Image (tube, rainbow, N blue to C red; front, side, top):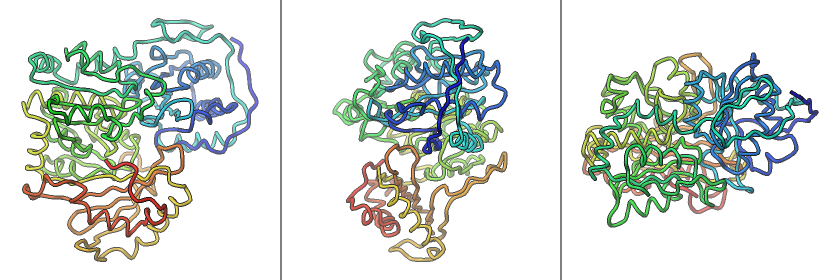
Length: 544
């Protein structure tokens, strides 16, 4: 095998975020940009000779070109086996499962998650470790340091590999396995959920559904499981063909972007259940007829009803949520005497808890839920969980949520996103908030009294690692909260996210509109951060 050492110079913008490196496609297309980052991944690993690497992505623009480059670099750096999804496709949860199932050394996942795709849009890359989860901060910190000092990379010179034909290829000692990207994942789901119950409920006509794949990676997975295996009517999965530009849409599963699904669910004759997933298949939106379930409520309801699912019937070990996620699941955990952990945003923080057997379910408000079956959030798994729950309870989505609120109270919750804010302005807003923290406790804002104000930091209970600067929290004496956080998932400027939460135990007040119920907290949030004043904007870009 001919291996070439290519001289290169560092780029100064390759610091990975919570989900790897995300940039515009045109940035990744710069000379040696992708190669520098991939070599830096390999340089940050030890003992990779003769090991197995999983490789796949969400099929967005530049996925195919990147796959070929990474294959040749993995060969040059000493990997002896590559496992690749057919067509270079693997959903993020499916990739996590493949890493775990085949006991691979790790995996490279090509995705920018819910960000738009296309020649002028976004691309992303991240490394997942042997447990199937995202690399921890210790690794990504070392990776970033390697990107700053890289001077050369290794690449093998051979023809592009056929990634479209399932089977095994050998190139001078390198074994390349092209696998069905769906089969292993579908088998895993059949071991978790009651597929016989679901088949009967769907075929009897009791359980009708619509799943919006948003022209992203979950199309083939949902078609195979929901329509082919479980027997949902043909066409129950919409926008099912993965496209490099996601059909010109934004593959973010919320009502603002999943418009076709939302119209169906609020039509005169909606199906019983509706759902959507995102670009790489790890997020989910859950809907019922004329009803939307917030991700925070979804996590809490799943925890409260986990015994209805075959895999979780023995009971949960514990639960965890990201800090900005509402405290709804905390109330379930308290009632059921379960351990409950509050972590920073980013799925990697759940990994240690899952590996240590401290939790079974986990989730975050950004439309992500998961369990110990993989080490990523999992959109289609959440959909199957809800379908299994509906089939067992024989209730509508709205009734399931209403019953949950009656039992546990409702955490009225929403998130306001101000996207593509100039980074200087965004950082100034956070600095302004920090300056106020020490003086906020006991201050009165309308009918709210501040109980605490801090910047969240997290000490991992398993390995003792510390993560600081994870968001600013303003807590009030009645349990309400406002959280401010800059998101690292965008590729232009910064996204300021404002999370608002108010607990309502009174069943007569639980069905009020969230924006109306949170109106006073929304005003307090602006008073504290001045995002509208500082940016000149009149409203958030997205409200979820």
